[in-house]
Length: 146
Image 1 (cartoon, rainbow, N blue to C red):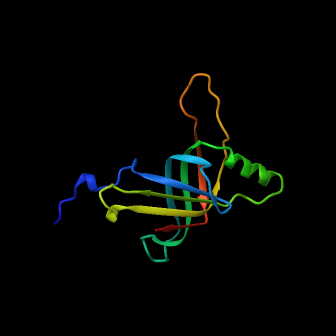
Image 2: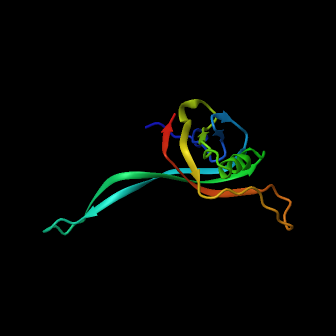
Image 3: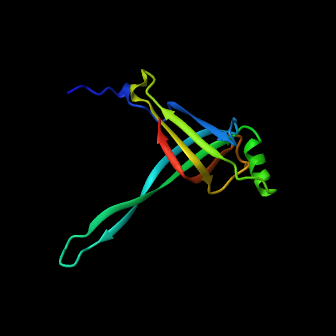
């Protein structure tokens, strides 16, 4: 059995995220934290004469949590355009984590058709001089592991 080294396991801090809006790569925001996940849709059934319930996966829902820093007004302008009759912004998130030693432990995920549940444009707080970190949950239409 090979020994697993801690330095070869990706940390939650090693990686980057990318944002695509309407086909253009923009630095509309910088990812502070992201978690993409699949939630399974299950059917549960206990057949007549059985004492054990059976379970089957019938589909999935792609969701996630995102914390970000606004670094430009591009994201707000995209939603203003939608409000004024334009198209919904085409949001794609792509991020990776790796241990930095080689690419053998790299995990890269791309989510497309991302729809945020809420869009924050900024926060003012007279008790803080920290960078404005905005949080939202989202759903996505598809994902791929690159």
